[in-house]
Amino acid sequence: MRRRAKWLLGSLAAVLALSGGGYAVIAQPQRGAGGQEQRAGGGLPPATAPVQRGDLSSGLQVEGTLGYAQERKLNAGGPGVLTWVAPEGSAVERDGRLYEVNGKAVRLMYGSTPMYRPLKSGDKGEDVKQLKRNLQALGYGTGLDPEDATFTAGTATAVKRWQKAHKAAETGEVGKEDIAFASGPQRVRKADAAVGDEPGPGKPVLTVTGTERIVRFQIDAAKAAAAKAGDPVTVRLPGGTSATGKIDSVGGTAAPDDKNGGAGGGGGGGDQKAKVEVSVTFDKPAEVNAPDQSPVTVALTGETRKGVLSVPVNALLALAGGGFGVQVVEDGKAREVKVELGMFGNGRVEVTGDALKEGMQVGIPTL
Image 1 (cartoon, helix red, strand yellow):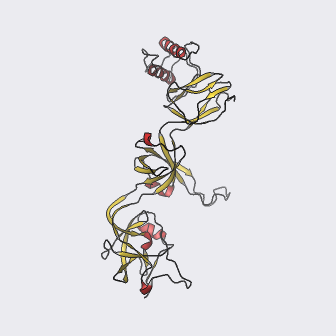
Image 2: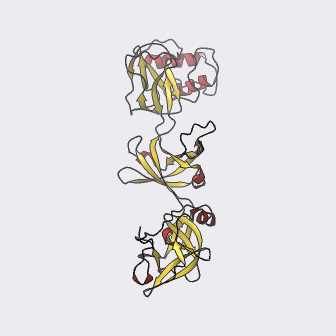
């Protein structure tokens, strides 16, 4: 039998160009000692696989890490000796203790503006509004106007009530070292200082995060089109369970493509590729119970074609006259059928051709 075609290797660029930028892995058959392709007797291929009709997705699977949103360092507000810190993994809500300096608690309040100054009568600003909203939420400032940015006499009275509830000196003022503002409940990821340390103003005490579970992963910049904000995903969690979610953000480039060793000619990192940071949120985050920093697999849906014919990617042949085909096996005989390629996905490729039908067997190499 004349060998008019061969299984592909090294023709990936041509296939990708024809498939609109999809991704495929194209293999070659094994060869015997004489360098000939291994085929079954009678010129038949060593193995076959069926032509299938169904939905084909171009989605990718990427490895990610389970974590929590909005990680940040929490710095000390004043000098002193650290006498207590919230334990790792604990969740701290409004008015809860984050840590203690010289036996005095630093408590969590909700707000986006950091605690950058002491707050007292006459002060004005968004931080004053935040304080008043927290005092109201805790039941100490019922009559306060949360849209008024001025620290009023009523604010001082509410502060004294709050201080009295915690058996603190009733000064009516809030020191920079008394509270820390954050966007919501915080989870303690780790302590950056130990009990007995003197961290000092501006030195980190805790690393905290939000309490919402997220997944972070990086994807090659060349494949970034497969990850769009709002796209649904499925996350395979430790233990074999899965959870649905969506892409929350697609960030900037995480690392340069440094094939030439960089502009400085340092030479290292020659195999680096540009990466894009992606984060995923869950549809039901409360049901995700796996440990922090667990490895997970994220299935990106990509484009889906409905009811198309497809064959395994390694069934493709490079035809001698140009183009691509498959080797159809019927009634103990093999013949080559030219096909047009469509979308690639999950190890298969969409094919069309007048002589191709669902259920036909096509040859594949033995790998």
